[in-house]
Length: 420
Ligand code: C6P
Image (cartoon, rainbow, N blue to C red; front, side, top):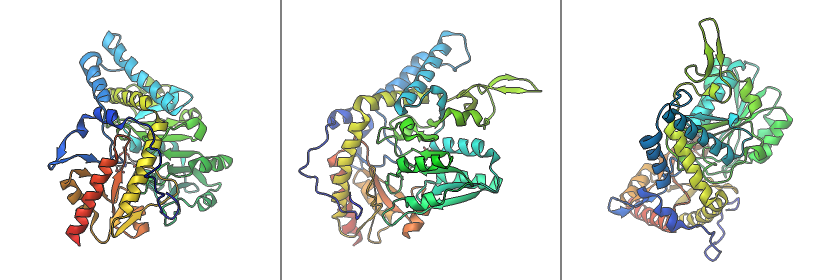
């Protein structure tokens, strides 16, 4: 899409190679009827679906290998530990981190960001500032507001334009000696905008400011190389990348994690405990207090294996083509207003239709078997910027196809007829 929201005609262009039929066969949940219609699942930004390979890995673990990790001398505990740490290595390789010591398992993106806010932010003061953007998810706003309440630090917000793009120069101008952290979404969940983190991070680096990238909506759609990005922290959730819920990752550069105090105390995060003194464990265990989500990590590892067999480059190319097709088809409908028309976009299409409430659109679509999300998408400041209560949002994954989009468009036509 270009900056004005015009979609080039791609109907005759060669379609990227990805065996969509075979891939769809891996996802049992897709093969069902909803309200008498085939399911068109277009709510992937909220949570993706899991292939059989991930379900099998979790079942195999519970049927054969389950025990607690890092604790037992018996065979099952060894197996569980090996599988759990094997998953950590898969994550390391997937994002090209230097070392597994930089991979902390969390409950998800929200938990990862809260970890950084609680731990890195512990010595922030009233002289300090945290810089975010106007398009952040609440998970990358509220933890910083809580930190500001606790420490007196100030939250600065970089502006966006009417296309939903970050105003990079304004963002850079907000960086100062007071800025202790920049925290920014790689991809906006409400708009689909891909932020120019490759340009923002070096600029922050020049000013010695660490950067946390909220990668929740980027990691399912493109290859991520944290060393090439040179970000200080990268947070993401497994459930948006075909893995289980309740598990996610905080990547943190070793130099930062080493300096950060633990944020939760308990088992496994210690080397020794006495009433006089407790010695904390090494990285990354220092940040993983208590019995972790072992099956979740193993499922995430299986999801990574699965994505690797398809290839993130193929996924990105396939989804870009589908996004162009979908945006073009939706744009042609009467009364459509696209919210988020950035030049660089991932597979999210947010829109409104005349004054039809997004929830009404979502309900009519559900009756047609089409699952989308409606509302503010946990990004209320974005909605306020555009002067709307919410949007209808269709979000894509590599297992979607043009039939899903056609079903969405037919459902929207019906809704438009009903509410006219
Ligand atoms: N966005 C959506 O429908 P958790 O809930 O911790 O897995 O992810 C939080 C989160 C953080 N940042 C971004 C950019 C996100 O999109 C999300 C989750 C979902 O858009 C659920 S609200």
